[in-house]
Image (tube, rainbow, N blue to C red; front, side, top):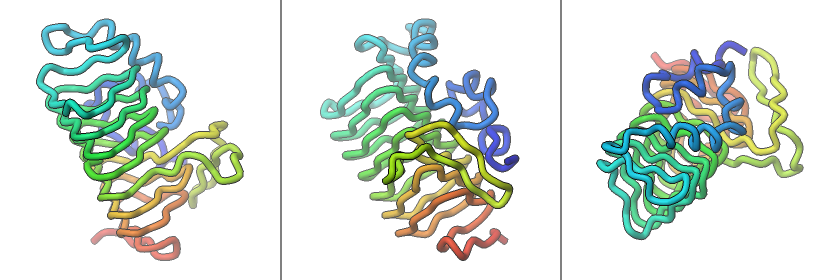
Length: 221
């Protein structure tokens, strides 16, 4: 499915993980590779810009990290990022330049591109969020199906078996997710699309669209 390919979702210059993603076709293929990629990249980061706080945890010196935030590695927090009060980063996470991880937000096995905002009570697991994407307060990625079967990405172009049990959401560049929304396992949101508040999303949402509900997805004018 062309709409789900990395080169149609993301601006790779807007993430420190660009080399990893450039070697793949679909973004979810990166999910099993994030941890090892962080370990290799962290070992060669410029110590004038990044400090190694603990084993496999690298934090840019210009980043702001609240003393109440919980950081677990492997983890890279890039320049000018902000990790707010009681954020919980469980590991295998890349937080991009200028990104915001907010109060009580939990991250696990994720790539957040530069300028991503997950600022209020969000859960983001096994997901890739593109440049300047934003998740409204209380919106979450659901990363495991209730029957625990492997995730299949389904869209108008067809279906793709991912072989993954854990798969949250792939958000393209500049996606806006409304407050209180749930992105079900295998959701892929095309770039510059908007999700209405309190939505329950599954499958592929085309780029430059407005998702009102499962049966009403309209093109932006």
